[in-house]
Every structure is written in structure tokens, then in C-alpha cells.
Length: 628
Image (cartoon, rainbow, N blue to C red):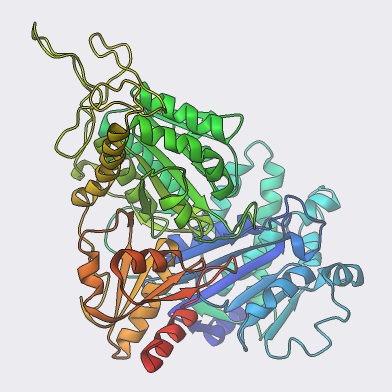
């Protein structure tokens, strides 16, 4: 009875109402950081908050335990307002060891809450992290609100009678930390307990141990006299009514590709070779074989794309995926798909480059590669998704354009979009128009002309003939084709004609895609911020903040990167200034300058991390104050 009264008093005193919060979990890659973040995300989504998450993986496959190279992190921004970014700086950091503290402490603003597993701050671990002195004692953490909890000991005490080994007990400490944070933000443990029951149905003793650890952490928040450990209350977000689920970019991408194939009336054949961060798309599609989906892990990148081209030749929609280095290996085969004029979807999940670069870090530096990176005049359609949920829409659109225009389409995502998640309002698919494919048919007239595989329609598109169809025999391959017949041709005039035809066919796609709209703000005036890809969130938030301060700033976000939207030039010319934030050295800005001769300014960043809202706000202020 006394305990209950103490809890009620503590609840009444400690819980602070907030509009939003940013929480980051960080520890060794074996500490279950991603799982902890995912379970906190599920509980937060169930509580009705809007949210955005970002898992940050170490680049090393298995770095030495306790070193800064092996630090894994998971950040979530959630609140009762619309959430469009992962948040600039964490309000709360849970650090499982000294290495996690060393890597993540610089991101914390003064006054942020730091929860440390004090049991891991041993002399050995401090040395492995590169500390020459204990940061808890040298004053370097004085700017933060530090809460030391011996999570390691708390977990072992809670599991002392379970019969688990010390090692098995220690593996449950992430759920102890999760219990603490769930209490801090008044989140229900039900979804986590249900997940444990499903996950460990064959090892119920492990599920029960993790539940005990979860309860121990939650009880600490309820009962401990840690006045520096605050409780927060964050209400429901106002979201449109409907059925939601949390979704990562590559989950949405897989669903969108399948929906596109179903609407085209085609079998989806996905051929890929593993590479970070693209591999999860193969994993997600492999789970969808109840639909007309086949997945094929090839022996290398070249084999993967050639198999996908073969699938399209046979009358399916061939799809392949990779990241920058793998796309480079596929470049000759992309040219083959352009020359044969077959539909193909190529997903490029960009990562920091060049070469193998920083495999687990995000970047947007493959735009030149997507638009220009092949031999010959080799145009392909280039699209880019803006958010994890937008990956569904753009994947569906990539399939539609590929089959309707008989052309390869490259869809750009990046490491952030691939792994980040957000709530997704599941769409009413029946309301979206289908785009069934009509394959070529042989004429039944007695004196009909022979089949011409390169006879184009009014959009410049050649017919799609399934091999083996009587009367539609034709030649196909990478050597230049004679107009109409498809026979091999070295005629100079024919090469000029066919090169122009392939180029103009791709340009004509601009007439089959929506005109560009202003995302927010007036359609002309002082300043337009032009973005593409995963910069959508921070640009959107920064622009809305400046608009709230009365500044004339507009946001234009491109999803069609080649060909560019047909009205984009006129739109940009209505603004005094154009600023293009990109996670590269300024690739889109150079394309806009060369295409439209507009004096667009670049805001470039190549740190492997997404833009912060503050960085874009500062660039807006600087440009409007100085004009440069």
C-alpha cells in the first residue's frame, strides 16, 4: 500500500507533457540495439504517436566488442504533431557501454538526458573505447543530465533464479533498458510481451527471462528514488483515419513492386546479388511468394541484371537491385536493356562512396551514375522516393513506366530510406488504376506485312513480343538494330535515327508523368528549396519553420529526376533564389544549371549522415541575408 502511494506521488510529480521527443539507443552491435529500438517503436506506434526512425549500423561486419567501430544505434523521433524527420539531436541517449558514449555524446545538446549502464564502465572497456580518463569523473559530461543505472547488475539480479547462464542473462539487458524507457514515456508493455511470446515460442524460458528483465527496468522507473530520471507524457498525433502499420522503405518498396506487377498483369522476377544496403529488398520480396513473385540470388551483379533482362524478354517484369558499386558492374547490361528496348526496373539503394565507400552510411551521390553513367547515349528513366512510405508509390510508378514505355527505369533510394521506418496509411489499392500490358499479336490477315519489332507507336514505343509467339519471330541483342526490322545494321544514318529514337522515347515520358507541384509555400517569390530523395523530411520541416516565422520560402521536391518534369523550368524561373540541398557534392544542382541555365545554389553534405533541420534553416537564413 505504501509502495502504491509512493508510485502515485512520483507519477504526479515527475511526468512532464511534451509535444515530441528524440530517443537514441546505442551500444555494441551484439547488444540488441536494433531490436530494442524496434520494440520501442511498436509501443510508440500503438500509443498513437507519429514517428520516424533511423537504424544506424556499424560498417564492420563484426568489429571487436566494446570498440567504437562496432557501435550500433537506433534513433526515434516521435510526438503528438506531424513528424517528418528523425530529429536533429537526441533528447535522451541510452548508452550501453563507453564506446557508445564516445561515439554519440557529441550529438547531444546541453541539458540532454544521458542514461548510462554504469556496470559496463570498467577500466578495460574505457580503454577499448579510447578513453584516457573516465568521462563520468573528468567533467566532460557536466553539460548533460546523467543518470547512472547498473543495467548489467539489475538484469542479473532479476534473472538470478531463471537457471540461465551468466552469458544468457547478460543478453537480456537490452530489455531492462527498454523497460526503463517505456516507463519514462508511459508506453504500454503489451506489444513487447506479445512479441516475446511469438519470438520465443520454442524457448519459452528465454521469453520469460526477457519479460522479467523488461519488468525489472519498468519497476526501476516506478519505484527508484532517481529524481533525475524524469517521466514524460506525449499524446496522440492527429493523423488521417485508416489502417496503419509501421513500415521501412524497403518493405514499402517490395509491396509497391508487387502491386505494380499485379496491376500490369505480369509475373515479377527479382534477380539480385547481396550488397549493403540493398539486400533487405531481396529478403522482403522472398517473403511474398504467395504472389506471382520469383526471387533469384545470382552469383554476381552482372548475372543478376542479365537474368532480369531475360525475364523481361520472356514476358515478365524483370527487376534487379544493388548499390553504387554493384550498379557500376551492371552498367553494360543496362545498356543492353536500353538497346533491346525491354522493360526493366533497377533499384539503386545509394550508400556513401566512391568504391566500397562507407557501406552502412547514407548518401545521394549516384545521381550522375543514374542519369549519365553508361557508355554511349544511353538514356533511362530515373525516379527517386522521398520517404519510406513513398517507396511504395514510386516502386509502383517505376513498373508502370517501364512496361508502358518499354524502357529501363532506375529507382533511387538510399541507406536512410532502406532502413528508416514511419507509420504507413495502408492505401485502398482498388482505387488505383491498373495498367495491364498488351503483348504484340500476329496479324491474321492473309497479306499482312511481316512483324516489325521496332515499329514505334505515337510515344516512340516498340511492341513487346513474347518469344515463341507464332508470326512474331525477330532478332534481339546489343548490336545496333535496323529501324523497323531489328536486323543488325552498321548504317550511319540508321544509327543516328535509332539513337535519337531511344533518346526521344525517354524524354517523352515527361508527358506521361504529373507536372511538378510546389510541396509547400507560394509557386513563386523569394526562395525555393529544391530537394530529392530522403532530404524530404529535413527540408519540409525547415521550410515549415521558416514559413511560420513569416519568411517567403517554398519547398519543391522532385520524384522524376530524368526526364525532369516538363514545367520545372518555368517554375524555377518564378523564384529569385533556388537552393538545392543534397547529400553529394552538388549533382542535381549542376543538372538544373545545365538544363535550365538557372543560378541555383548548392548546399552539399557528404558525411554519411542525413541533413539536420538546423543545417537547412541556417542555409536559408544565409542565402536570404546575403543572396549568395
